Image 1 (spheres, helix red, strand yellow):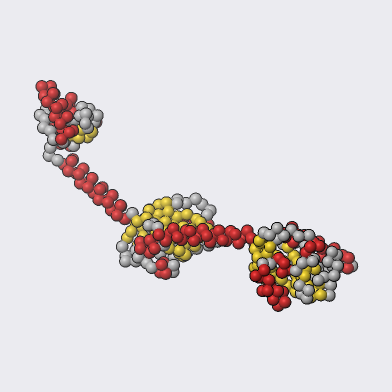
Image 2 (cartoon, rainbow, N blue to C red):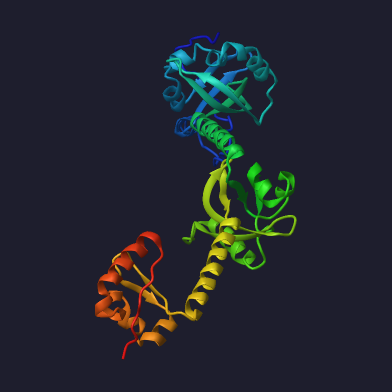
Length: 359
């Protein structure tokens, strides 16, 4: 135990405060004043520990605030009192063995029983003729909690991504750092192959430079970029696939990265292209048909006509659109018959009507 624990020991004016380089001082009093000023202005908790007695011999104001003990209480305590019981044997050995420049992470307990995750950096000093440890204690609880939350979030992301139907990948700088099984299936590359590739390597040459530039700019975050667009890629087998593709900047593993999500739209695009081909074919048949054709709605209003209809009756598309067909081409004596035919046509898709040519 330290004698007179209620009385604060006088510091050795020659104790070197790490990081300081004071000018020569004229008196011991000046040295003491400077020491106390520096000691108490340090934002982290600082302790001086007698290596022989294993007790505190000094502490700064930050230590009082961080742990909730008074100075007199600290001077009657050992550093072991701040540690969990299961850690004390290990800590005692470290106190005996430390020679300087050693940084370790521990769990400390405050006076109220709260736990702090701390990083302790210790060095050997001469304090009033005794060999002591000068320990700077930095509270890293918030950082560790943030890292733990990040790890949990990343674990949840992986659990979701590994079973997702969408292709999901993450890249940082130039290279992929994560790909899910759906991404492997889409590209034809195994996970380890993709993790060795640059993110633009699988992009079709027609779009590769655009994707490379956008990818780099997205990581810088300086200019707004479209998050979603269609992307063409080359699979390992050499065939081309189209993706409905989204990209967004995220933080992954504590650093900036970009999250990619893609849905294979190749079959949909092919189906749409087939529909367009069929529409073009039907349009050609409609316009080149040797019969006059008019498309009407359920009320008999003309929606469109083909070229032969114009040739037969002399009406242009502008003349007929929105007009009732029986008013244009049905003789008066056939009007009732035409109305009946139109009604049946809308019900059965089959009707015959006598038509008159425009004079």
